[in-house]
Amino acid sequence: MSSSIPRSAAVAAVVSAALAAGLLVGSASASAEDGAGVRIHDIQGTTRVSPLVGQQVTGVTGIVTGVRAYGSRGFWIQDPTPDANPATSEGLFVFTSAVPTVAVGDAVSVNGTVTEYVPGGPASGNQSLTQLSKPVVTVLSQGNPVPAPVTISSWSVPGAYAPAGDPAAGGSINGLTLKPRTYALDYYESLEGTNVRIGSSRVVGATDPYSELWVTVKPWENANRRGGTVYGSYEDQNTGRLQVQSLVPIAQQPFPKANVGDVLSGVTEGPLDFNQYGGYTLTARTLGTVVDRGLERETTDRQHRNELAVATYNVENLDPTDPQEKFDALAKAVVENLASPDVVALEEIQDDNGAKNDGTVGAGQTVKKFTDAIVAAGGPAYEWRSVDPENNKDGGEPGGNIRQVFLFNPARVSFTDRPGGDATTATGVTGRKGHAALTVSPGRIDPANAAWADSRKPLAGEFVFRGRTVFVIANHFGSKGGDESIVSHHQPPNRSSEAKRLLQAQAVNGFVKQLLAVEKQADVLVVGDINDFEFSGTTKALTDGGALYPAVKSLPRGERYSYVYQGNSQVLDQILTSPGIRRFAYDSVHINAEFADQDSDHDPQVLRFRP
Image 1: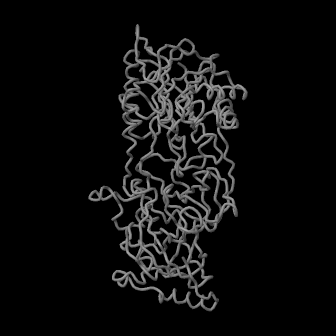
Image 2: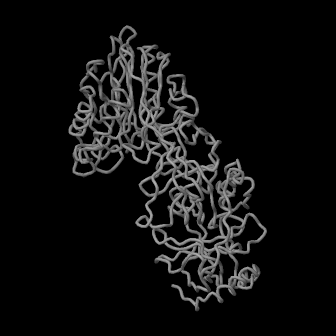
Image 3: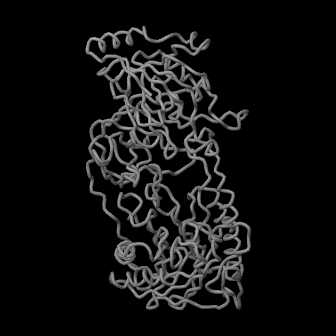
């Protein structure tokens, strides 16, 4: 793919001088005519899509600023003599497919085709990455200084996130002229492929299994006391977040392990990339050092004798094939961090052979292994109730048959069994003398409703605590799969998955209203992985008519989160209360989402109240 001329220091000096003087590049007018001698900023243009897309160009020169030998293999080049237009990037990715043979500091001339690569494919809604494909590379010299980095800092990134999409273009921002001094997404796009740097920055997304983390260059932006950046509104995006990866092979330099609140100290420098899993990413040649700020896992208060403690916990596809260490860690969290709640609604309990797709739907072995681990950790001997799903009808991992399960401590609370519940039988509401009851307990809410197609059906149960009936509805709403990311070229992004969750929320809200119609002061808790924010249309539908209140809103704004995604601390897991539950203590117990070492990717939620 590449060839070179003799790489003497004298040649390097001559070529560097020629590059600096602009003698090795042609004019923009020449590029428009024949694609020869174009400069990088001519290719990048002033919008997100290159004005030369699809064209063959020759003699594109620059200094290599980064080389990636894994994943999307290639290298970045940058023109050391920028133009005066802040909207045009001076950096460009050259996609080689094979492992690149150039090195940082090489001066190169590249022939290739200008393409717009959409990470994740066009259906993802992602912005595209301007690049040169099928390149023919000539190395002109070695050892040239890398162009000075552009510093990304709190003052350089605008406070507004993105322009509104062009209605005539279906809401796309692709055709809009970049305004890098006005919008954060435009600012980052104007630096696509450019050598950039950040100084010491707080970690807002822990190191993940793919050797990447998230930082913020705006330490005050929606900050919370544990070091995260809270996502609290569609209209208030966190503009200072950046993903960080390393260009240095992991075998050569292991990627640092960081938790939220730690600091990536010193200088982190390299080309600014755009990828499917986070958008704008600093691919670091030079990576800062992680300073551990000592984030600790939280422990909730133990319930008083006359308080009922109800928790919800997504245990991330738990099944008997998982190592015993996972069961033990989850059990320890239930006992120590959650203080052994009276009722625990679990989400993502898989069947007895996990993802093996052989028709197995029972989960008795999974639950027994978990409850045994809880006892071994010093917790109560929980009993459990659930309803097995139909095979492969509830979504999730094929063959896994995830479902919700109630654990309850029989020394503190009893379960009212009303037989007849199965995967397709709906529980209903009955009542006598102003006291509501379920027709089936445990039972599923309206399982034939199209809202639950290929999704988990709500599990309703009737409990008694100190003589008072408490209804708990455990949920795992449809995922956000299919939604466009917040860095989509559509602004606002298309959130197609909301339509299904809206129908699901309406179904649960309607069921709660049936209970309250019979017993106005009934104690009802709607719990689980709602897969949506406290400010979302899903939550609004759940609370319609005052039937429910999202208890997470009782917390200060900085405490409202159960999940960290792309550096945003956000709400997915919730407990909602009926009007009869007037006083309660709510806790989002942060033990997973902010940490590189996780037992689950969700934080559990606990609510304590006196029925």
